[in-house]
Length: 122
Image (tube, helix red, strand yellow):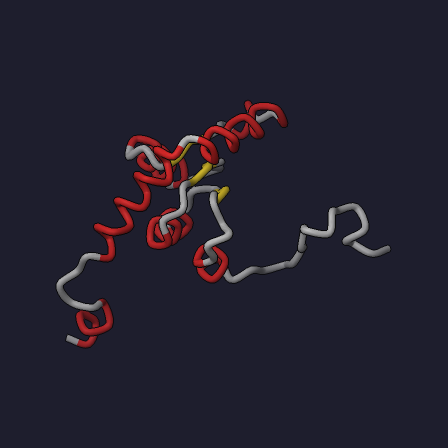
């Protein structure tokens, strides 16, 4: 059985994706994440708003902090429905405040007096 037959032509399934490369694409407008630390920092770096679905450990704290900073929304995985998920995605996609805020934070993140590689070498 072809694993792709149940999906539209625009869906690609793989065991692993290069997350940073995907986030760097200008076609990506929103990142749905569990909210782990790197899954929060990389979208900030690339200026992408988040929809967090935290599951355990630091994920809830990271997603809550992102939401407090106004570039994310979150869900309790136990309360997730198809309709609420769709509604939240549409809220982030149509309300420019999320993208504007994460781009502002991204710009601050990139504004460093020393390049990270030079700092590491030092």
